[in-house]
Length: 299
Image (cartoon, rainbow, N blue to C red):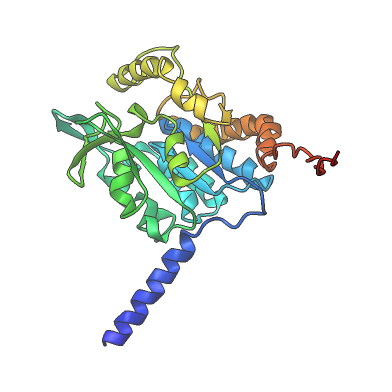
């Protein structure tokens, strides 16, 4: 029995080593990281981004996400085909991941997210993914960014998507966690920590026009204004920033999935020249030819 357990453990260790091995890239080509921001239903634009990157053979070595960006990133890292992700996006509704509740800490719970990924894949942990993933959340007590890269996916996804004021905070590993967008709206820093040498950032700006019809609209508009004044850090770290035009879509516009996905694809096509430039090997410093030296002639 012990030998059987040892063999099984060895198989698990080899699988993990394979899953998290350094990406095999041509010599000199930098490792590309992709950071996906939050944005509720606007996050479906990330599918258009991934579609164009895939069609143009842009190799992504690492992926990180905040809020809905974390959900898209986790599903993609699990190896789910984009066609299936797009199909599910058009069917998604708030009730798939949220349930209204009465609490002093929020208006709804996102506990249903624990099982949401099962619609796409049996993958349940970071160690089972096909590519390295980081999920960003915020520690509500310390104000620090928390980047999940190992362990179960469910709690990390719930924490990253726990929009303050709307969803209840998530208690996990001794922390009180909320949406990652508070401290890592576009989680570029996580990619740097993972080893990315070039970073593509996808930022989904929310609209600041139109009617305010609910408490969710008020909360969302308030945070959008705050974020507008706190973007310099991640922008200076990103090598290329993709910004799909999704300002006209509201937080629960899931039925407009095709339009939102198309907006992501259009913005990525415009950015392709800059993205392709990232694939070029870093320029080597010029080598100065040494002049031969000769012994001094004797008088």
